[in-house]
Image 1 (tube, rainbow, N blue to C red):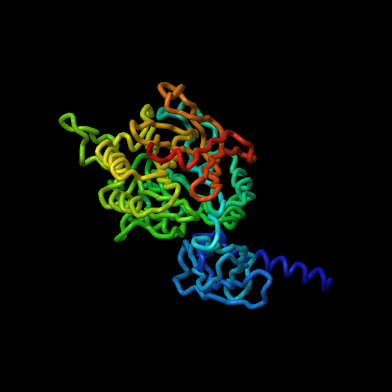
Image 2: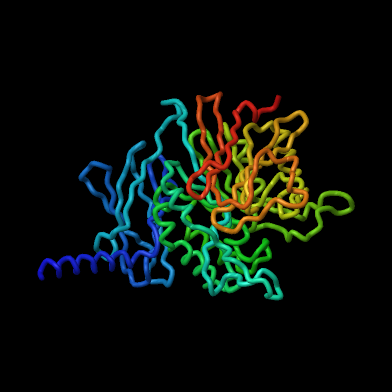
Length: 453
């Protein structure tokens, strides 16, 4: 009887501690000497700490979270500093003075510059993660409500597959969660949507398996196709910055753009919504590109151009929520903002910037678009979509797109970007992977092929 009571008591204690954790832990940026760890706890929690130690060591250090608690939504992050390079650390959260089951480990970056050959590594990426919530999902496919739909969200076990990958980080390419009509004009609804989707059990192992970075697109920003006119854009930005711990978020309290630097690769995480003009604004005025129609906005464009000029990275990956290069797409793309699009393309040509590749989401199908440039190396737009939302088939002018290198539709997928070889001979490989990790297509390019002749 005593043994049974002890076991029952232990199980109750364990369930209670876990019940105080809404979601997480999730890894943020892991650098050479610091790391960020994210978690969300319930409203009842009074205190949170993080204890950590080197793997195999007995010396434990503790960091007390000093931010506010007791809100309806309580996402928080803790930065662990003063770490050693290329070292694995174990961590565990303490909640209300008791060790929780929220724990994991991470390994800091290795210092290779001026010390070692450039390391090979990989990262994962994808877009459009729709998680069904029946009362608020679409029930019909048309406005007359005559054609019942199948659930828009598909098999979420793809995240269990991704959790088994040994990659440096995950880059979410937008539509990480999908706001619904009930959320669009409700600040509480925006918080709820991120909170609810992040808490799903199927995500938890993946969140702590590798660093998680994100840009947004329309559905995790607000209503479909929304841009700078969104009246809750500031509230949306606050939600996003609380549910991810990117290295930074724009400048001067505006936007969410930032950058990832890993080995000899830089990823420019752009914001295609905060400054975005309405898509219906005319592309041209008096036969010339309309300078007032912009997607990134002047401030962000200046940041991007200066970042590209400063960079010594072999591969410079520009991540955008919307497609960039696809000339025949009937949907929103950077091509439809010709003044700003031409500005960036002219800049890349003028300064002979090497190694530029675009990485995009949004389209609910995956493909690689190639656009040749006379006298310059070709540009590629790698689109990865969708993780769990319904797919759309290639159709119309896109069915046999002459700019498509490879592509497929109506299959859940993510992509693994891998980088290998010695400096001066680096290779980037993009492999598309399906729900269970099956190979859906592979493409690669050498760094020499991203240089001007």
